[in-house]
Image 1 (tube, helix red, strand yellow):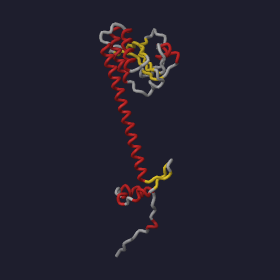
Image 2 (cartoon, one colour):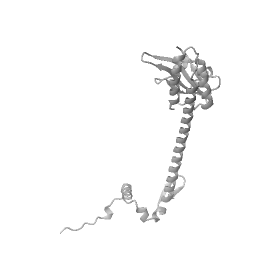
Image 3 (cartoon, one colour):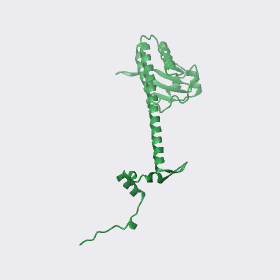
Image 4 (cartoon, helix red, strand yellow):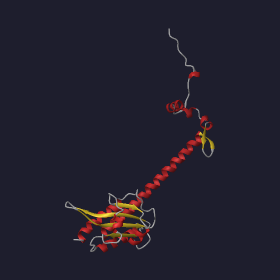
Length: 218
């Protein structure tokens, strides 16, 4: 007849992983032993030792703060997208009946200043002084966002601008690709246009301008 073997508790090695596994399998442990919630001490960087309950409350506050920050960012992005959509819509409507390239540039410039608070919008063509310098900034995607030299800024804009967004205005057909110029947006803040930013607005506007260009130059 076999004997029941009782494990020797002295031989049991209790480590952090074993405790963690036990607590995960017994989620009601602290409900059964509520006094441990306040007795257990956790090292805190600035406050020394705090209770498990205090640590939990701190984590909950941090999570709420993070959620509030994420919500604020989402609301901010939604407002920015709404402003951009309204600006594109007004440009689309305002360009109906446009008779010249200069009129086109003036219309887009006015709306960019009134709705997007930009310093200026310019539509540069090959004969313009800064055209080749800015064209060199364009990458494979035909866009650039960031800062250029003060000398170039002064040549392109009438007022002080510290960052720019550039995009080629291109008309693509089955026969060929025709480049009409470079759309240049200037902002007074140095960090307004940054390389990692989304280019949705300038791409949509470039497509819109290319359609009008086709009729104006032919």
